[in-house]
Image (cartoon, rainbow, N blue to C red; front, side):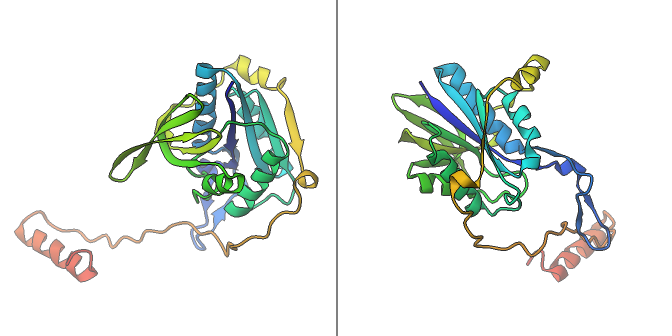
Amino acid sequence: MLKTIACFKWVIDDADIRVDASSKRLILDRAGYKISAYDRNAIEEAVRLQELHGGTVSALTLAPPTAKPCLKDALSRGPDAAYFVNDPSFEGLTPGQTAALLAAAIKTGIEYDLIICGEGSGDLYAQQVGPTLAEMLGIPCVTFVNRLSVADGGITADRKLEDGIETVSAKLPALVTILPDINVPRIPTLKQVLGAAKKPVHNMGPAALGPVPGAAIETAGVLAATMDRKRIRFSVDADGIKAAVAALLKEGVIA
Protein backbone atom coordinates (compact mmCIF):
# COMPACT_ATOMS: atom_id res chain seq x y z
CA MET A 1 0.00 0.00 0.00
CA LEU A 2 1.41 3.35 -1.06
CA LYS A 3 2.18 5.76 1.78
CA THR A 4 2.44 9.33 0.51
CA ILE A 5 3.37 12.59 2.20
CA ALA A 6 2.15 15.80 0.57
CA CYS A 7 4.08 18.84 1.78
CA PHE A 8 2.37 22.21 1.72
CA LYS A 9 2.91 25.80 2.84
CA TRP A 10 0.52 28.41 4.22
CA VAL A 11 1.31 31.64 2.36
CA ILE A 12 -0.03 35.17 2.06
CA ASP A 13 -2.83 35.47 -0.48
CA ASP A 14 -1.25 37.56 -3.22
CA ALA A 15 -4.66 38.96 -4.13
CA ASP A 16 -4.65 40.83 -0.80
CA ILE A 17 -1.20 42.39 -1.13
CA ARG A 18 -1.11 46.16 -1.49
CA VAL A 19 1.87 48.35 -2.37
CA ASP A 20 2.85 51.69 -0.87
CA ALA A 21 3.27 53.93 -3.91
CA SER A 22 6.10 56.02 -2.47
CA SER A 23 8.29 53.40 -0.79
CA LYS A 24 7.28 50.37 -2.90
CA ARG A 25 6.97 48.38 0.33
CA LEU A 26 4.33 45.66 0.59
CA ILE A 27 1.31 46.34 2.79
CA LEU A 28 0.26 43.07 4.40
CA ASP A 29 -1.84 44.28 7.36
CA ARG A 30 -5.11 43.04 5.89
CA ALA A 31 -3.78 40.16 3.82
CA GLY A 32 -5.31 36.74 4.25
CA TYR A 33 -3.55 33.39 3.88
CA LYS A 34 -4.05 30.32 1.72
CA ILE A 35 -2.38 27.05 0.81
CA SER A 36 0.24 27.79 -1.84
CA ALA A 37 -1.29 27.14 -5.26
CA TYR A 38 1.62 24.87 -6.20
CA ASP A 39 1.05 22.79 -3.07
CA ARG A 40 -2.62 22.30 -3.89
CA ASN A 41 -1.36 20.40 -6.92
CA ALA A 42 0.89 18.34 -4.63
CA ILE A 43 -2.03 17.38 -2.39
CA GLU A 44 -4.23 16.60 -5.40
CA GLU A 45 -1.59 14.36 -6.96
CA ALA A 46 -1.12 12.46 -3.69
CA VAL A 47 -4.87 11.86 -3.43
CA ARG A 48 -5.07 10.86 -7.10
CA LEU A 49 -2.39 8.20 -6.57
CA GLN A 50 -4.23 6.97 -3.49
CA GLU A 51 -7.40 6.55 -5.52
CA LEU A 52 -5.44 4.45 -8.03
CA HIS A 53 -3.28 2.39 -5.68
CA GLY A 54 -4.83 2.62 -2.22
CA GLY A 55 -2.71 3.43 0.79
CA THR A 56 -2.61 6.60 2.87
CA VAL A 57 -1.93 10.29 2.35
CA SER A 58 -0.45 12.50 5.07
CA ALA A 59 -0.36 16.28 4.70
CA LEU A 60 2.74 17.86 6.25
CA THR A 61 3.35 21.54 6.94
CA LEU A 62 5.76 23.71 8.89
CA ALA A 63 4.42 27.01 10.22
CA PRO A 64 3.76 29.22 13.25
CA PRO A 65 0.75 28.19 15.41
CA THR A 66 -1.30 30.98 13.81
CA ALA A 67 -1.42 28.90 10.61
CA LYS A 68 -3.74 26.34 12.20
CA PRO A 69 -6.62 27.13 9.76
CA CYS A 70 -4.54 25.58 6.98
CA LEU A 71 -5.11 22.12 8.45
CA LYS A 72 -8.84 22.05 7.78
CA ASP A 73 -8.30 23.32 4.24
CA ALA A 74 -5.65 20.68 3.53
CA LEU A 75 -7.62 17.79 5.05
CA SER A 76 -10.78 18.75 3.16
CA ARG A 77 -8.85 18.05 -0.06
CA GLY A 78 -8.50 14.35 0.68
CA PRO A 79 -5.53 13.48 2.97
CA ASP A 80 -6.19 11.05 5.81
CA ALA A 81 -4.20 12.92 8.46
CA ALA A 82 -2.11 16.05 8.93
CA TYR A 83 1.20 16.71 10.64
CA PHE A 84 1.44 20.27 11.95
CA VAL A 85 5.05 21.13 12.76
CA ASN A 86 4.63 24.44 14.54
CA ASP A 87 6.30 26.98 16.77
CA PRO A 88 6.26 30.80 16.95
CA SER A 89 9.87 30.79 15.77
CA PHE A 90 8.87 29.13 12.49
CA GLU A 91 8.29 32.48 10.81
CA GLY A 92 10.29 33.66 7.83
CA LEU A 93 12.42 30.52 7.64
CA THR A 94 14.84 30.06 4.76
CA PRO A 95 14.41 27.07 2.41
CA GLY A 96 17.36 25.34 4.08
CA GLN A 97 15.86 25.73 7.53
CA THR A 98 12.47 24.54 6.28
CA ALA A 99 13.94 21.43 4.65
CA ALA A 100 15.99 20.58 7.77
CA LEU A 101 12.97 20.84 10.06
CA LEU A 102 10.74 18.85 7.70
CA ALA A 103 13.41 16.15 7.50
CA ALA A 104 13.64 16.05 11.29
CA ALA A 105 9.85 15.74 11.54
CA ILE A 106 9.70 12.90 9.02
CA LYS A 107 12.52 11.09 10.80
CA THR A 108 10.48 11.00 14.01
CA GLY A 109 8.49 8.18 12.44
CA ILE A 110 6.20 9.45 9.68
CA GLU A 111 6.00 6.50 7.30
CA TYR A 112 6.28 7.18 3.59
CA ASP A 113 7.07 5.67 0.22
CA LEU A 114 6.66 8.87 -1.74
CA ILE A 115 6.95 12.55 -0.85
CA ILE A 116 5.30 15.10 -3.14
CA CYS A 117 6.11 18.81 -3.08
CA GLY A 118 5.10 21.69 -5.30
CA GLU A 119 7.82 22.96 -7.63
CA GLY A 120 8.12 26.06 -5.45
CA SER A 121 6.16 28.04 -2.88
CA GLY A 122 3.73 30.80 -3.64
CA ASP A 123 5.80 33.36 -1.73
CA LEU A 124 9.55 32.76 -2.06
CA TYR A 125 9.39 30.38 -5.04
CA ALA A 126 12.98 29.32 -4.29
CA GLN A 127 12.44 25.76 -5.62
CA GLN A 128 14.94 24.50 -3.04
CA VAL A 129 12.93 22.79 -0.29
CA GLY A 130 12.07 19.62 -2.25
CA PRO A 131 15.59 18.77 -3.49
CA THR A 132 17.18 19.72 -0.16
CA LEU A 133 14.68 17.61 1.77
CA ALA A 134 15.39 14.60 -0.47
CA GLU A 135 19.13 15.04 0.06
CA MET A 136 18.68 15.16 3.84
CA LEU A 137 16.56 12.00 3.76
CA GLY A 138 18.96 10.24 1.40
CA ILE A 139 16.33 9.43 -1.24
CA PRO A 140 16.09 10.05 -5.01
CA CYS A 141 14.57 13.34 -6.16
CA VAL A 142 12.82 14.05 -9.47
CA THR A 143 11.94 17.69 -10.19
CA PHE A 144 9.60 19.55 -12.57
CA VAL A 145 7.27 16.57 -13.01
CA ASN A 146 4.14 16.96 -15.12
CA ARG A 147 3.18 13.28 -15.30
CA LEU A 148 3.65 10.68 -12.59
CA SER A 149 2.89 6.98 -12.27
CA VAL A 150 3.69 4.34 -9.66
CA ALA A 151 4.30 0.63 -10.37
CA ASP A 152 6.48 -2.26 -9.20
CA GLY A 153 7.99 -0.44 -6.26
CA GLY A 154 9.07 2.59 -8.26
CA ILE A 155 7.93 5.73 -10.06
CA THR A 156 8.04 6.84 -13.67
CA ALA A 157 7.88 10.56 -14.28
CA ASP A 158 7.90 12.97 -17.19
CA ARG A 159 10.03 16.05 -16.47
CA LYS A 160 9.14 19.18 -18.40
CA LEU A 161 12.37 20.86 -19.47
CA GLU A 162 13.03 23.96 -21.56
CA ASP A 163 13.82 21.95 -24.67
CA GLY A 164 11.57 18.92 -24.30
CA ILE A 165 10.24 16.17 -22.04
CA GLU A 166 12.54 13.80 -20.16
CA THR A 167 11.16 10.50 -18.84
CA VAL A 168 12.93 9.10 -15.79
CA SER A 169 12.35 6.34 -13.26
CA ALA A 170 13.37 5.86 -9.65
CA LYS A 171 12.88 3.31 -6.92
CA LEU A 172 10.78 4.10 -3.88
CA PRO A 173 11.15 5.76 -1.46
CA ALA A 174 11.54 8.93 -3.49
CA LEU A 175 10.58 12.60 -3.62
CA VAL A 176 9.10 14.49 -6.55
CA THR A 177 8.39 18.17 -7.14
CA ILE A 178 5.48 18.69 -9.50
CA LEU A 179 4.39 21.36 -11.96
CA PRO A 180 0.94 22.99 -11.87
CA ASP A 181 -0.12 21.43 -15.18
CA ILE A 182 0.05 17.90 -13.74
CA ASN A 183 -3.56 18.14 -12.50
CA VAL A 184 -6.46 20.40 -11.57
CA PRO A 185 -6.96 20.54 -7.78
CA ARG A 186 -10.43 19.57 -6.70
CA ILE A 187 -12.72 22.02 -4.92
CA PRO A 188 -13.79 20.48 -1.58
CA THR A 189 -17.49 19.86 -1.11
CA LEU A 190 -19.33 20.96 2.03
CA LYS A 191 -19.29 17.34 3.23
CA GLN A 192 -15.53 17.16 2.79
CA VAL A 193 -15.02 20.45 4.62
CA LEU A 194 -17.12 19.26 7.56
CA GLY A 195 -15.44 15.86 7.54
CA ALA A 196 -11.98 17.43 7.71
CA ALA A 197 -12.61 18.39 11.34
CA LYS A 198 -12.83 14.69 12.28
CA LYS A 199 -9.49 13.70 10.77
CA PRO A 200 -6.43 13.31 13.03
CA VAL A 201 -3.91 16.15 13.37
CA HIS A 202 -0.50 15.42 14.87
CA ASN A 203 1.11 18.47 16.45
CA MET A 204 4.90 18.58 16.60
CA GLY A 205 7.18 21.20 18.11
CA PRO A 206 10.90 21.93 18.48
CA ALA A 207 11.22 19.55 21.41
CA ALA A 208 10.77 16.61 19.03
CA LEU A 209 12.93 18.07 16.28
CA GLY A 210 15.98 19.48 17.97
CA PRO A 211 17.34 23.02 17.55
CA VAL A 212 16.34 25.16 14.59
CA PRO A 213 19.33 25.36 12.22
CA GLY A 214 20.81 28.78 11.58
CA ALA A 215 19.93 30.72 8.45
CA ALA A 216 22.51 30.73 5.68
CA ILE A 217 21.00 33.84 4.08
CA GLU A 218 19.27 36.94 5.41
CA THR A 219 16.46 38.87 3.75
CA ALA A 220 17.28 42.58 3.82
CA GLY A 221 13.89 43.64 2.49
CA VAL A 222 11.12 42.95 0.00
CA LEU A 223 9.95 45.63 -2.41
CA ALA A 224 7.37 45.59 -5.17
CA ALA A 225 8.58 45.43 -8.74
CA THR A 226 8.38 48.69 -10.66
CA MET A 227 7.98 49.44 -14.32
CA ASP A 228 8.72 52.95 -15.56
CA ARG A 229 7.19 53.75 -18.93
CA LYS A 230 8.45 56.57 -21.15
CA ARG A 231 5.03 56.86 -22.83
CA ILE A 232 6.53 57.85 -26.19
CA ARG A 233 4.09 57.67 -29.07
CA PHE A 234 5.10 56.81 -32.63
CA SER A 235 3.11 57.16 -35.80
CA VAL A 236 2.47 54.12 -37.99
CA ASP A 237 4.01 55.60 -41.11
CA ALA A 238 7.59 55.13 -42.36
CA ASP A 239 8.91 58.05 -40.31
CA GLY A 240 7.29 56.69 -37.17
CA ILE A 241 8.83 53.26 -37.68
CA LYS A 242 12.26 54.83 -38.18
CA ALA A 243 11.80 56.85 -34.99
CA ALA A 244 10.78 53.73 -33.03
CA VAL A 245 13.84 51.81 -34.24
CA ALA A 246 16.08 54.76 -33.37
CA ALA A 247 14.60 54.90 -29.84
CA LEU A 248 15.15 51.18 -29.33
CA LEU A 249 18.74 51.48 -30.53
CA LYS A 250 19.35 54.39 -28.18
CA GLU A 251 18.02 52.41 -25.20
CA GLY A 252 20.13 49.38 -26.12
CA VAL A 253 17.09 47.15 -26.52
CA ILE A 254 18.27 46.16 -29.99
CA ALA A 255 21.70 46.35 -31.58
